[in-house]
Image (tube, rainbow, N blue to C red; front, side, top):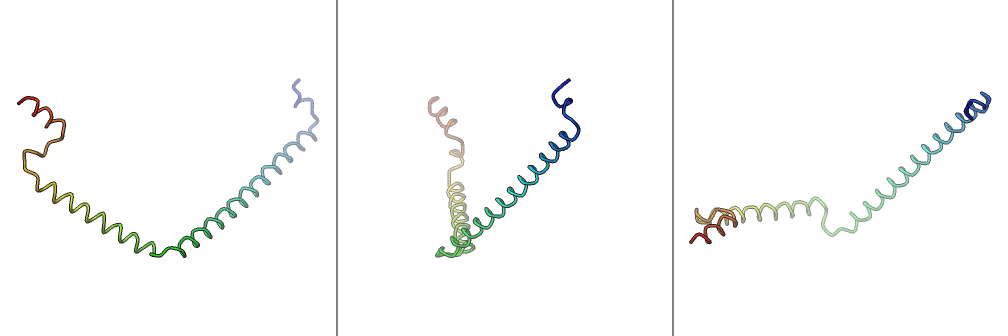
Length: 99
């Protein structure tokens, strides 16, 4: 006989109830921790946004404009290259070594 088989049914039921109580307690603590973290993170985010000189939407707009300008400049530079030089550096090195 194993040890659990030797326990009376009342003791087994008591273990199940104790386990369930511990699980519910852990769940309640987890939810309380999640709520506490959410409140702290929200508060911190609001404080950070209040200290920003430029609103996030304006900052995003500026970065988007910079990215578009960089893309346009790169495209213009790529289009201005002579046709023969539009190969990667490895091929250019191989062509130089043949001459």
